[in-house]
Amino acid sequence: MTVQAWLIFTAAQADDARQRSQTTDFKVDPREIDNPMAAQLGDPVVAVGKSVAPARILNDPEYGPVWADRLSVLPIRALDDEVIFLPPP
Figure 1 (spheres, one colour):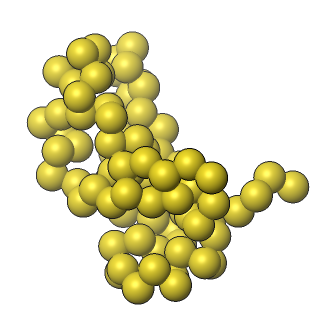
Figure 2 (figure 1 turned 180 degrees about the horizontal axis):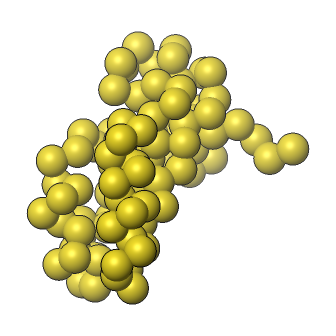
């Protein structure tokens, strides 16, 4: 169980981050929320089909200058990875 702060992306925002990652050495590849238990949190921002990336990107000395302007507008939630991701097969 790992609880950390996550940036929450819509599908379009995640696609945009992946596309922009192609033009920089500092890649961001949001992971899709795939665990139906996420709905039990009662937060509409955290839903299956949305994606997340660690919020620490915003404070990273290398990633921050590249990504902070674009990602700092995204919602941030502290979430347990076991609640938002299904276990590996």
